[in-house]
Image 1 (cartoon, rainbow, N blue to C red):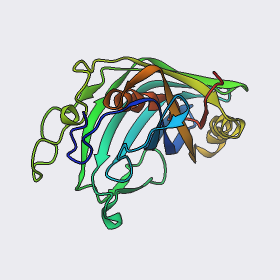
Image 2 (tube, rainbow, N blue to C red; image 1 turned 30 degrees about the vertical axis):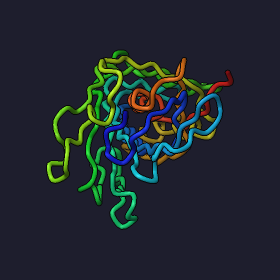
Image 3 (tube, helix red, strand yellow; image 1 turned 90 degrees about the vertical axis):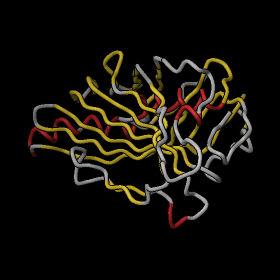
Image 4 (cartoon, one colour; image 1 turned 180 degrees about the horizontal axis):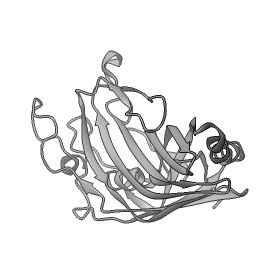
Length: 248
């Protein structure tokens, strides 16, 4: 079901795990901007690892999230956001692995290197509802993305075959999805984010970088292509804070 030419088997998964790096900037008006790079590292099914997926050995799946909105000491409200999901096919040669560096603040563009063997597989351009991040312990967040679309034209003209989202994700055929993701925020990141708005009032702007682990769960097992797409969108809920899943 995976059309990369490097993974030719399908599997079921109910969780996708990985890590993220983020930069957040708040200005003295209370407006925030955030950029997030998330890298997927594995799949699980019924709390057990799923093997032979090819992820990180034959390809890397990563996502880039940008969000903006308003910030205070008690909450962040994202009024606009987008997410793009990419494949890096150069993992067999470490020298060609994709790397990135954040700029001086979240308003600056991310600097990328070794992206010649990467291609976009899908994106979501907007939120269905404003994304809410509650910074009062025990903190939680809710994000809804809409209009996820796969790329349907060849993204790597120099390679044999068609490299696109629709050849990577072969099922289900209908990829119009709205995603809801929620979870808990750990106390360290709550304190970090809660102080940004106050600092920006006196300094003009305040910037912090964050990193952590992430996961996304599904109500039932889904084929790997669907799971990847859904989880990419679920990163909207991971873009502002470190996440710990609620106990089932």
